[in-house]
Length: 354
Image (cartoon, rainbow, N blue to C red; front, side, top):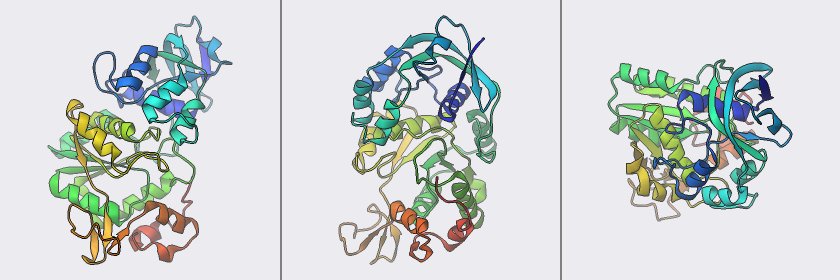
């Protein structure tokens, strides 16, 4: 049997495709499917899906797939599964990027990562029969396992919260509002391939476990890691994240400010606008939530749906994850006013950034 060594990014894509995280996509897409998704966010079978799911191969390695019924997948020097190739093709990356990301310039991180993929694409069915632990602290679970837990908890409504950061008081404001409305809250950090200077998996896990154990009603919280990769595709990725959480059993999914954005390529609420157009077509309720801030007059963390002072720039202090990261990087712990001291103390001795 022919074989190919795959990257961590490819392994995680194979794993999630095989375990059903990307339903209704069940196989790596062919050229027609990629083009249809890129242009219209619809698969040829008329089901909504916003992003291409593909298996890329370099020109050097494509011979391993030509005229082969099955190709063994090697990850970390072990055979972990196999791919049954159907079609081998190339695509116009610039055209696909323009449709998917809204940009074709490689100064956009998501576009650059897409351009850096192999020259060829292979469609087909994948099977993973050996799961490899990759520093995910045994907190990565299958959709079936999570749905079983939700059923055992008897939650009729479950809302998913996407993050790749440690929690600050703005996040806590959101969590508590969601707990007021829904039976269960899934806090689900994404920890697959991300970008330099994102928080490490251990920092995210330690900080969230501290917050949940000390301050939250644990029986109404489900915390696990989503080990898929960031695409940095802004509004389209927000819809993708919603579909993935639906596959894990969520009835609702929260989209916040600049969801899955990068730099200043997308507007603060572009994802809300896209969600409004298609949320009724993907069988999960999308909750569009305005970004939290600290109001000096109200003397509390709030947002524009709960505070009349949001237009008063002198009254509003933005709770900035970027500023918090900068303070932590410089060890300026005194400037982390919007982190609980318990959360901050739990991570001080850890490596914080990728």
